Length: 376
Length: 205
Image (cartoon, rainbow over all chains, first blue to last red; front, side, top):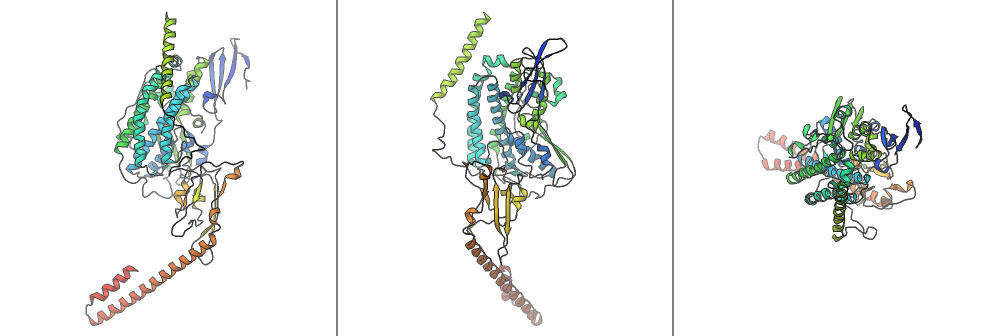
C-alpha cells in the first residue's frame, strides 16, 4: 500500500502520487477512505475503500427472528432511520399480509416525511461545511432540532428510531404532535427564502458547485443511481410515485427534477424535495383519521411463507430495498439490504476522474452518502 | 471589467450573509440552561426499563416468565423467577438489565404479559465503567418482598375460596335445577319462577 505522499512513476514518467482522503476526514462523514491518484491537483483515479463501519447487519438478521431485527434497520442509515425502520415493518407486513390501520398509515407518512426533511437539512448543513461555509449549518440544525423535538416527544428517540411495529406504530400521536407539526410546516415554509438567499444565490456556492461533478447518463444503468442524484439527471424516478407503498398514492405531490446533473442542481432537487415533503405532511395532518394505531390482530410468530420477498421504499438518499428469503421459519434465511448510498458512492471513480482535489470534497458532499449505510 | 463585477458580486453575497446573521441577534435566546433547569421528559421517553407498581397488588407484577429475556435483540435482560411456597403465581427473583447493551427498542415492553415493564425517566446517568450500567430492577422492591408475597398469598387464597364457593353454589344450583326438572316432568306442571331463579344463579356463577 502506498504511503501518504508516495511518489510513483507512471508510464508517461510524470510525477504522480497517491493521497489518502480519510478514513478520518471531516468531509467523508464517517470512516470512508478514498485513495486518490493525483497528478498535481488533478485526480487521475479514485479508489474508494469501504468497510470500516461494517457491522454485519445482514448476517445478524440470519441469527435472530424477524421481530428481533427491528432495531437494526434504523442503525443502517441513522440519519433517516425512521424511513428504514418503517420500511422494514412494511416489508414484513407485505410478506405476511398484515393489515395496517388507517391512522397508523398516516402517522407513518408524517413521521417519514419529517425524517426526510431532517435528513436533507443535515445534508445541507454538512455539505456547506465541506465547502467551507459555517453559518448555514447553524440555521439548518436549528430547523432540524425542531423536527427532532417533535419526533422525540412521540417516538422516544432522536436518531435511531424504533417506532414502527408490525401492523402499526409503538405509540399513538396526540393533538399536540399534530399541532406542533402543522406549526413547523408553516414556519419551515418561510425558511426556504432564507436558504435561497444564504446558500443557493451565494456566488461562492455557485462557483464551487455549478458544472462540478456531472453525472453522465450511462452511470444510471451502470451503477443503479437513485434518489436525488438520479432526479438531478432529469429522471423523474421516485418509489413513492412509481410503486406507491403505504398510502403515498393518496397525496398530491410532485417529483422535482433537474437536467444538469451537477452538484448545484442536486442541491436544488433536495431543496425542492423538502418543499414537497412539507406538502405531504400538511395533507396528512389535515386528513388524519381517528382509530387504532396498531392492528388488533398481529400474528405472534412472524413466519412468512417459503419464498422470496422484495420491498423497496424511497429513503432520503434513494431507493432502499429489502430482499428477504424465507424458508418458512422464524428466522430469515437471508436478508439483503439494497442501500442507495452504496450505489451512489460506486459512481465516484467515474465522476471524480479528471476533476480537481477541492472538487472531490464538493462531489462527495453533494451525493449525500452515509458511510455506515454503505458498509452496513 | 469582469474582475470588478466578480468583486461586486462577492461583496453583495457577503453583505446578504451578514444581514441574515445580524437579523438573528434580534431574536430571543432559545437555549435551555440544562443542568440548572431540568428538562421534562416526555411520556414516550426511552431509557433503561423499570418495573411498574400495579395498584391491585401494591407491587410490581413480574412473574419471571422470561418473555422479555427471549425477545431482547441485545440479550441484555437476565430474569429468573420461582414459585413461592403454596402459591400458584410465580414471582421474579432476579431481574438484571445491562443498559450498556440495550438499544431501547421497546420490544420487552410489548411482550410483557402482565404489562409491568416501563421506561424510567432517568436521563443523566454516568459511570466510570460498563458494570455501572447493570441495573438490578428488583432492588427497590426487595425489602417489601416478604409482605408482598404474604399479601399475594392471602389474595390468592381469597380468590381460591371465592372460586370454590362459586363452584359449590353452581353445583348446588345445578342439582336443584335437575331435581326440579325431574319433579316437573313427573308432575307435568310448569313452575316458571323458581326455574328462572336457578338460571339467574347459574349465570351469576
